[in-house]
Image (cartoon, rainbow, N blue to C red; front, top):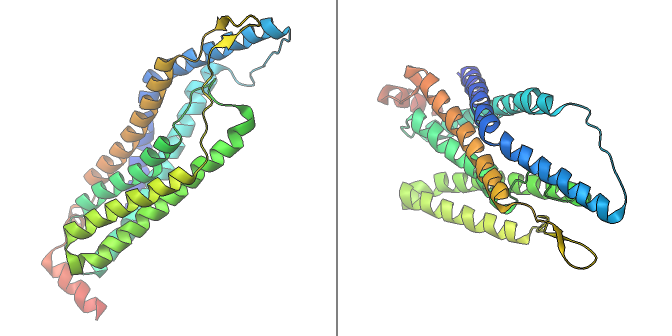
Length: 270
C-alpha cells in the first residue's frame, strides 16, 4: 500500500507542478520582466555616474529560462514534494492506526497538506520573503539562502514534534485540547527561532547623484509586493493540488477505517 501511496503522491505532485507553473508563467513572469528592466535601468544609471560600463552576457535566453528552465524546475519540485508528501502520509497514517484510532485517510491527507504548506512555505516566506531580480546583494546571497533553509528545516522539525506531542497527550486531555496546545507550542517555538535569525533589508532605495538629487528611483513597491504575494499563491496552488489530487486518487478501500480493520489491527498488535 505504501508504494501505491507514493505513486499517487508523484502523480499529484506532477499535476501540481504543472498547475503552479501555469499560474507563475501568467502572473509572475511579467513581474520578473519588470524587475529585470528596473535592474538594467539602475545599472545604466550607475554606469553614467561612475563612468564604468559592465556588460553581462546571458548563457541562456530569457525565453528559454522562463519557459523551459522554470517549467522543468517547477514540475520536478512539485513531483518531489508530492513523493515526500506521500511518505509523510504513509508514516502518519500508520502511526494513527497503530494507536487504534478510526481515521479518515482523506482528512489526514488534507491536514497534512496544511501542515506541510505552513511549515515549508508560509513560515519561511514570512521570515525571509522571496525577492525578484534586482533585490538583494550578491555578497549576502549565500548567507540569505542558508538562513532560509535553516528556517525550513527547523519549522518542519518543530511541526513534527508538535504533532507527536498532540498524539501522545490526546488520550489524556482530549484531541481538541492537545491539538490547540500543539499549534500554540509550534507557533511560539518557530517565532522564537525566526526572531533569533539574522535579518536582511536589501531593497534598493533611490539612487542619488553627487549633488544629492535623485537620479534613479527606488525599487517599485508594487512590483515587490505583487511578486511576494504571487509567490505565496503559487505555493498555495502547489499544495492544494497535491492534496486534492491525492485525496481524489486514494483507493476507496483505504479512505475510512472500518471496525473490522481496526479489530484486525488490534489482534495484530497483540
